[in-house]
Length: 120
Image (cartoon, rainbow, N blue to C red):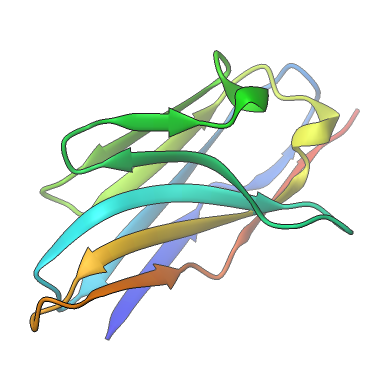
């Protein structure tokens, strides 16, 4: 069983910063991709940023230049540094990992979600 534990959400004023972190634990062979998605009320869940085990990153156009994703392969953690936050960044943020199990199948797992609210 794989568990993802997220932390770091909260309330911040426009222009402020927050850092989200996610730690994966359990039994698996390797983690291929770690990422963050978000879902605002009434909207579909969307990719915010993702990073491969080799460090290749992918960002949504709306967060490029403001958010930075990073990971620690040794600790199986991924972080999202969010700067210059805007009210439209308000959403529940979910950690996602795509991993290879001990029997070499590929599965993905989701965290429980953490609320980010950008408001004055």
